[in-house]
Image: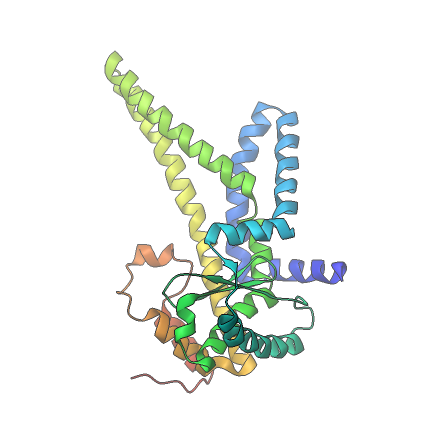
Length: 290
């Protein structure tokens, strides 16, 4: 079972939708490696050990519990909520399990108490639904759940944990570098004006600007992978027979938003709702709103 899970993760790492995540990891890691190789090999070993430990924690039940805690997902305690949602999830899960036998043997259902209808796949085996999702019809809820189960079936979160979001130490160190660059910029400005040396001011601001641009550049690749994962999950849901229901759900959740600017779209974790529905229609889903 462990061998199969490992091979599934490796297979998904090298999918087209994971390319951006890999590039994000390499670009960020290059900064860290450069800094700590210059500082000394022993520091690099320490960083590698911390990184491995962060991955182990991220893949553990405790790590998944922490992820749920961070997004406000809680155990579903209301009986009426369970009666409504659990059977819908079980129907979707059984279809997905037949399509993808290596899908986790158990999905944990949690709730986030927000009025907006939505759902999220978290970690390796958790699906979170918002309180607002209960306001939608059963068939639409199943379409949305099918999309989230697809993320678990494709192990999107595991890939992100392994080579993207899970590299906590790299993300943490990048934040430290950005903080240091900001401090350097501030002190450079103060020192430059005191000494009347605008070269120091320019150098400090240039260093801070380069770090800021570098991190923004890296994030472009991670966000691209995230959007590709959404398209993959939409396709999976359609293949389970929930294309119409998912398209209807996407319309219910997202089309009231204003038109995205190009910059906002580039840094968005999800594609434009109309583009997602358009792709489903191109796959043969007979959904029409207008």
